Image (cartoon, rainbow, N blue to C red; front, side, top):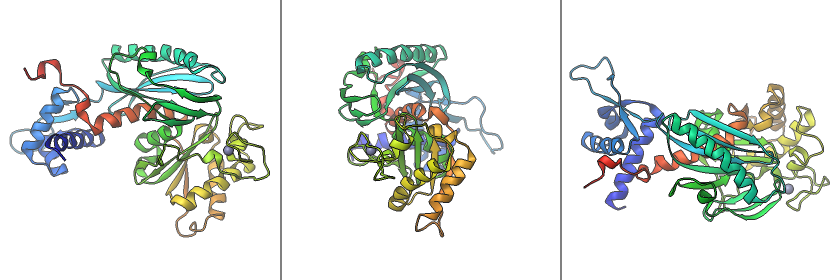
Length: 373
Ligand SMILES: [Zn+2]
């Protein structure tokens, strides 16, 4: 590790500590993180020069001696853009560094079978509105992520397949330009189910869980698997396709090539939309038992429309899961309803961009007045 990498890592440690745990003095940060007071002072000075932290006027009370000025993440002034393309809408939001959703714009749009370029033009409109609103609130957006309902290669910016949009190999390179974002604005693409799981981990039912499966049904059925506090992506980012676990080998043909996938029962192409009836709960439990046996999560979080099916649906899924998993007698898998509702993937998209910033605060340039001469 080069010296600059060590410093970058320490900047990340201090910023993440302030974001997750709230304001405190430099001395307290040193105590909490194990860094020296001199190092913390220098790191805080750097973060102040990037406008990522701020000094609070009111120092912590109750201390003996000279009161220390607390520093806090500049939560309300820094934010990220979350974007989403789904089968029936485009959406843009701004989430600030404290995790608060500050701006949301949604536009109903029938995107199925519409070329990607035309849908991106629709997305451009809501994006522009979100950025205008953020600027009016004094929020500086440091980057963004676009959530897509399909298999995405985040590195090349390619959407390989979005079965419910009927998109194949859509090239999303140069997305920032197509969205008319400011020059150099970092914008990533990712799978919506992975992003929904990330939102649940940071802001929802997953905050107190280290390993869980977030499953949602909307256009399709998506799942994001969180193991030890990280979203399990697999070697290509394709992990978590719970919708393609077979629950009825003699069932309807599915876009993936198999028959009777969960998605043929719960997705938008299913004969009827998901309902709170026992057959739907049993089919979901039958697919989830495979994940439970493979990765041993603490809990399942029901998101999207599944969260809206009520507590009795969640109870039925949990009971069925209990009956058909080997370890349930000793460690039953708990079933929660998502606290984030329909916004999970959109909020997760902004959260991913904020995580990128927190992991390397030097991606935000020094304020002009703090630039070395
Ligand atoms: Zn399938």
